[in-house]
Amino acid sequence: MKIKVNQVDYYVKVSGRGQPTWLLLHGFMGSQQDFATVAAHLPGTIISVDLLGHGQSTPVDAPECYTMPVQAEDLRQLLLQLSITQPINLVGYSMGGRLALYFALQYPQMLAHLFLESCTAGIADPKERAQRRAHDQQQAQQLLQAPLVEFVDAWEQLPLFKSQRNLDPAIQQQIRQQRLAQDPRALAASLLGMGTGSMPNLWPRLANLAIPTTLITGAKDPKFHNLAQKMASLLPNNQWKEVPTAGHNVHAEQPTAYVRILRESI
Ligand SMILES: C=C(O[C@H]1C=C[C@H](C(=O)CCC(=O)O)[C@@H](C(=O)O)[C@@H]1O)C(=O)O
Image (cartoon, rainbow, N blue to C red):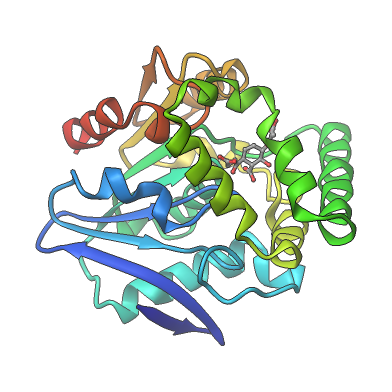
């Protein structure tokens, strides 16, 4: 179904019923389809959303619409429109994890449990942050000037996704087709508006996040293993679950282990 929030039509899929309630946030170039397998094996009510500019939600090419404050407020209003009044379990993967972390810091009263899969709290060092922002801007320009297929081809070669080559070819193709179906203008705006180089530095705020938090990483993703290790040292109420045979996208590579972590953590 489509839910209008601040002139944006968000595509939302609601499955199951009763408690607990889950909200699942996909990653960059993803959609609610990413979590279809996971959603089918969770108890209660599962809300999957196509984030702004992704999937079937309105493609907007204004970067200022993609900032974390705007997107987190949109998600808050979306939950209110769905009459969600009980604290929910919020699950975010990669870009969706960065947004989930920001949402948790802004609206802690709305959450029962926070799950952060393969994500970061931003970049604290100003020089590193500027370098990343420049990289995000360069990638945004490529999205605007070159065929999307060239961007997707390069993206698939990132070290984070090397372990995905062990996936069933049909699943690999599904992930690829989902990326190719995105609106490149919206993807560029997303990178500029809330890319890792643009998002607020949330590291100083982690010590104040009292919500039970579960960090999830794949052992074949050293970069985000190290980020999770640093987050685990700062979050006051957390557990860290690492899946030995997975890379960056744990839920796609090891869905059974992933669902077990979610179900056993709440
Ligand atoms: C490449 C890096 O950063 C990107 C990697 C993962 C994030 C993501 O959402 C990937 C989704 C997917 O393709 O499965 C993405 C993000 O958080 O927006 C990052 O830009 C890196 O080395 O940090």
